[in-house]
Image 1 (cartoon, one colour):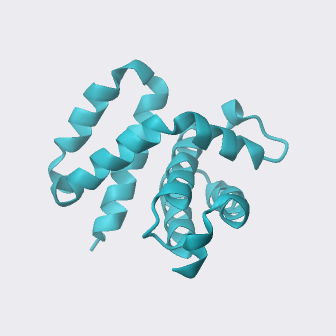
Image 2 (tube, rainbow, N blue to C red):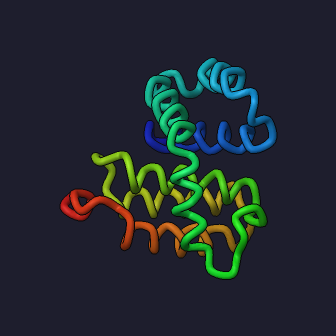
Length: 141
């Protein structure tokens, strides 16, 4: 059985993926995502995550870009980019989610939806972000 948090994260990643292709259609993508029967129990969290990621996307993308060694952010696959955005958002803004949980979840989602190398890639980038950018309070969880 898939946990509530996993449903939340997978729904957010899928919506972020769509937004890369249709950036001007946030409201439509949000509505379609929230109408999915499979996520009704985490609907409010999905909406909150998507709205906050959208509000903070420039900052999130800048932070991710800082830790992409020899990579241009625009060259990262769309799915990996979506997973990195969600992971960075959780590390920076969701104070109740332990760092290890975010890292583990993003790696699992990357393995499920990304390429063979996605898990390692996502883990490497998010681990650097966690160690240098995550608020101090996150280390006490």
